[in-house]
Amino acid sequence: MPSADAIKSVVDSFPDPETNRPLGVMGQTGAVEIDGDRVRVEIGLTTWAAPLRDETVEALREKLVASGVDPNQCTIDTTTHQRPADKLGQIGVTAKSVIAVGSGKGGVGKSTMAAAIAFGLHNAGCKVGLMDADVYGPSVPHLLGVNERPTAVNQRLQPIERSGLRVMSMGFMVPAEEAVVWRGPMLHGAVTQMLRDTDWGDLDYLIIDMPPGTGDIALTLSQLIPLTGAVVVCTPQDVALLDAVKAINMFRKVKIPLLGVVENMSSFICPGCSERHDIFGTGGAKRKAEAMDVPFLGDAPINVDLRKRGDDGQMAGLYDDPAIAAPLMEITRGMVRQIVAQRGGQPAMPSLPVL
Image (cartoon, helix red, strand yellow):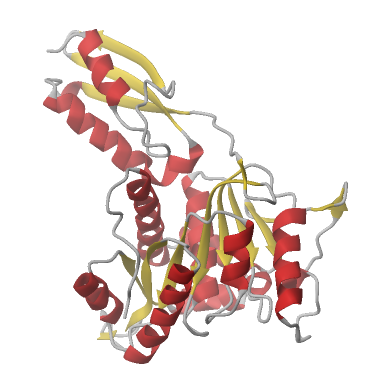
């Protein structure tokens, strides 16, 4: 049985998921108690790391067991460690991670996936904002059932709160059926205003739903704010994968790291007979990702209930249904793991040539 000092040394040296620095250095090691063979340790984790809480605890447990602690007598408790976000970029958004969700073409479920990731992070315990930068076709207001306009306080737009998310969209500013016919400079101005003039508060994650394709919004974002990375959404068929390549190359050109690819609509399970149908094919994105040694964050099957939630503006409750929640939460955790890997200086399963 190791001493209390030896156990504390193991805990102190364990990396904080958010910063990759030792818990002891970051002031996140709490009590270390020994009672006979029983060991109890306490660590502080930030809300940013909430999606990885369970696996972080298990990884620390393995370290303690390797040092001689009885696995059946080891308790690890977690508390919330407060660490506010710094201001990012020239416009000063207070967010720890800013993530763009993009696609090579429309109709692949990009906005649905952006909302699903945002709600997954929030349900895990993170502070999350969702910005709909798809100026020409904003879908987020409909998906979330929001039909109100934001107010201004002290000349700052107040994001619409929806089930814990802080949301801003061009769809809040214009009638739902009105087309936005703008040239590049006007797009740049609108995106800049949404980022700069919205009172986002202190966020762990700001998820940005990008327009489909390879327009100049990505360039605008890269100039305004340091993005943590991008997630590319596609469907399994070759045509969608070819278009995903263009989105990937766009992110590379503007120096936005790629966190991974998501294969949406990967299959359909018939609710009547439980037979699987690969309507758009299956596994195309995963096979290409493996062949290119790039991250694959996961796949999401076609789910009728998820589609209904989106149509009815009830996306906020999607994690109440385990059949919907399981693949989406794994995609969300996979994305956070990629950020942790990048911060750890590992070859963060890398920039994403999905073809």
